[in-house]
Length: 251
Image (tube, rainbow, N blue to C red; front, top):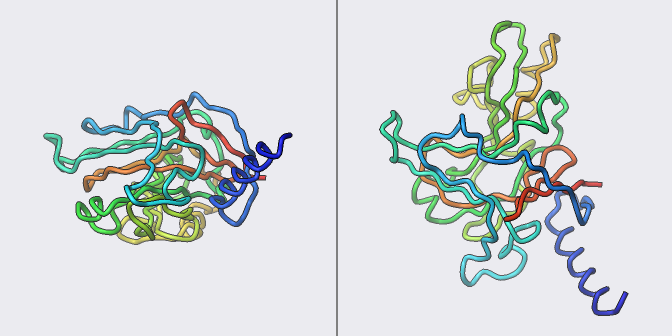
């Protein structure tokens, strides 16, 4: 390897390692999955959730936070707060995968999180907590509701630590709150739970709760225009690129 190529490889490795939580090593390449896309049955209105290049910036922002944390692309998302004839009139979108996680154990989830590109305009639209979510559709399998085999397990992040640039990794197992959409346990949107509390509420000694799908989602609440990258689910990081979703394995 030439000296120039060796130097370029070292710089790239330094950039990649700086974006990974807990200084974990990430494989430099990965496989593309064809199973990611807009989950149509969970889409309301005409929102946008599309793989794109960038964003790079905003203008005047330089350094690692001026580019997506992995590769050159991200998942761009746009939802409106008043664009339908429904009540409420806001839009909703899930960009996810209904195949690769199907049947996985909910209690086997150990690491979840992502990076976000948040703007000051989004804060104007809905406050500092106006952020995208991570949503797992699951079969809760709780003894108290034996015929209830569907709910959404939702993570609501805290406010981003930075705006108009890429955030550091946001750990969904340690920050924000979780809830189940159907009230199957005490973890509801009104009674917020930590990740550990939510998992404990599902671990009631009966059949294991299982995953149907995993997604990055937004709505139905405030207008939001931004981007997400580096979705982590256990030992895999899902790198959103303009030409597809690449799986990067944490070693």
